[in-house]
Image (cartoon, rainbow, N blue to C red; front, top):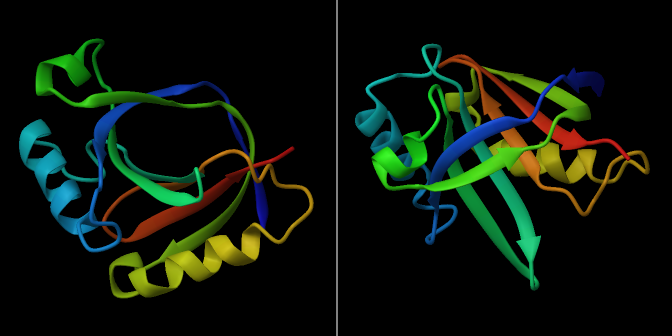
Length: 135
């Protein structure tokens, strides 16, 4: 795992994927269609966390301008800045089935905050960063 310092909070907007994991592609396709920006032109994130014993997954896009969440009629969320541990996944589209395994392994490390969400940062169509918050 590499250390990465996210210098600032990131404001994002998106939607809760009710049919996780099956609805992830559809949710991101909807976001890309609404914003008109593909990965590389806008940052996209997958945010997952356990609440009340259940996994919640949010497909999200970075806000380029204040008020985009309201404009597009989506929920807003903030990815907190600070220190993260990361693993880079190249050619992620062909390896989506192993993302959960990467996070599972990362969460075994005593230096990660297991109470914070896991973040997938889709930097472009080729590279994705798995991120977990450091304690």
